[in-house]
Image (cartoon, rainbow, N blue to C red; front, top):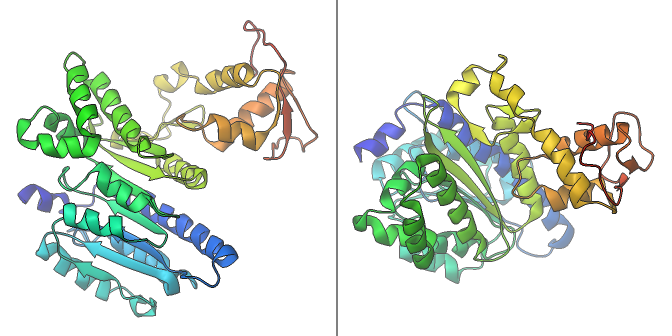
Length: 384
């Protein structure tokens, strides 16, 4: 409990970035849900929901607002959202829920919300999972931010994602899970998170690996486990510790729809502490953030846009296809964002490596049709 309390004693840079990512995605997601409901569900339930099962006290000790208050502020400030949002917050610590309730009550304009935010004090376990499994949820953004891993499971995530319009963002405490995988005392929790067979296989494969490879394998297997439950788009964002040396945790986004994946990818990209040739790292490192704007040798040694140009010439050889279809088919599970694709295609066109339907100079719209040559000269410059 002391560690959980200390987590909220200050608003660290990592916590600010995490809250910003979730609040920005909530705002974008909610507006997409509202527009979709207005178009297709005018005579049906038009509520949307935000559920946070490990909500914390609402404010850090320094007074900075944490995620629940940022989400509510987004809703209060939106003419339609404030009439549709059902916000449910939970924390097992009564001290946290009392503090959160006080912070919510003090929010300017909170009375303008049609549905009063609900705050409860429960331990997250099988009962909550069973409740969600038996419910047909309205479109819901589900945020799970446990201190460690207790309560976090594939079954919990799936109990919400089963319904239309439901997305999930959860906090993955890499350090504690890395240690817990080979700890018999928490074997049950690890099995619930990865699945029993996958967890056992992961334990065997991890044994000989050095730390960087352990991390890659653990995150890769978590993403695979989430995808095994159905068609899913999974996007991890890594946070480094205050020294910028070790990974502290990941924020994992899961959605059934490409649109949600695309929106979250753009939001996460803007919160990255580094970019190489404009390609986001999907990582926040406090040390890199403090060095932003300085020339760093690493950036000059890595040229990911060159790699992207080569991949496109190979994978789309002989095809004529729109810019948006190129992006949609190629970007999933890769670090590139739409801006990167447009930039590379402009460069390839300028170098005479592709042809494109007429478009204004310096722009490359989603509907521009691109023709790739049937074969490519690997010795030639890709124009990036």
